[in-house]
Amino acid sequence: MNAAPTAALLDPKGDLGHLYGAKTTPHMFVINPQGRLIYEGAIDDKPTTDPADVAGAKNYVTLALEQAMAGQPVTTAVTRAYGCSVKYAQ
Image (cartoon, rainbow, N blue to C red):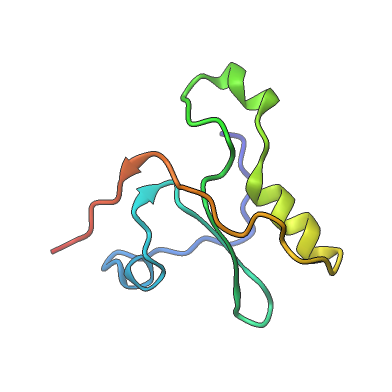
């Protein structure tokens, strides 16, 4: 909702999804410029569909990006992703 992506990756065969072990949608991955996975898991700490909960959520992706861009280690590098299961093409 109100997203403004600068790039989008389409993975119709699920090659990258399988490579990274994506199990849910969304299952978030932050990869640094050197190609190293520095965060994987949930977008935030509120596994809910209620938009009112977003304001109080701890956004793990934003935190990982901020820490990495400041040259700091990502303090929470892995969380449990939540959402609907990914349906890979057969």
